Image 1 (cartoon, one colour):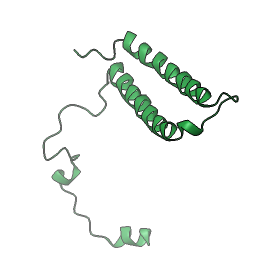
Image 2 (cartoon, rainbow, N blue to C red):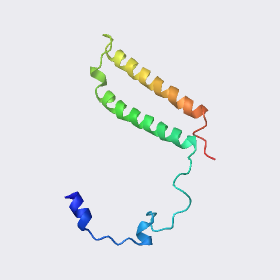
Image 3 (cartoon, rainbow, N blue to C red):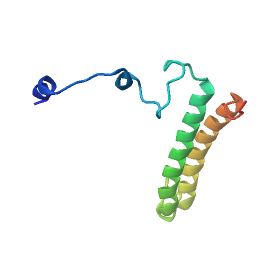
Image 4 (cartoon, rainbow, N blue to C red):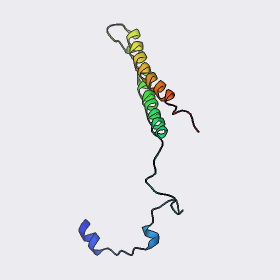
Length: 103
């Protein structure tokens, strides 16, 4: 069916149809421009903290029932403290790299 529709379709290419769509504007520059590393660091930072919120909400709901190594609620609190510590190390790394400073 795909081959038949390709063979029997009418195609009228024009220069306007061949241009890439850029909100009705003429494209400026090339699509192969390099991005600064800070862009990727901020993107990763956003994803990390977004995932942190996704994991913290169910943890907060189930906090009273958590038990780690038989420690009761203190075990659940210890578990989240380790998780937040790991994320804090990533945050400090991005902060020291200067990704949070806009110029």
